[in-house]
Length: 126
Image (cartoon, rainbow, N blue to C red; front, top):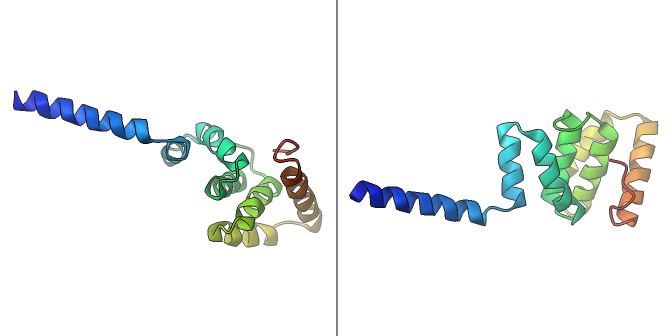
């Protein structure tokens, strides 16, 4: 009888924990499992809403080619959005990715970042 009660309580606790999890937690769990495409799908709406952590993660994923094509220009766009919101990790990543880019790539990335922000993420090339 005790085992059954303990089992029921454990199942309820797991159910409560999963009910509390949101897109950020689900995206992080997917990313940590190596399920990058679902992670991108979960992080993108958060990033578009201005979540700096999600913007930084999308930058990382574009830089590494995780769930998306490897693309320094798109990584720059997401890092710059997160850095503008004060994310210290994104500022560091932005410096690193910028140093590895050509002048043309940097110019394109800056233009894309400005257009993306100005359109409230409706005119983003990502």
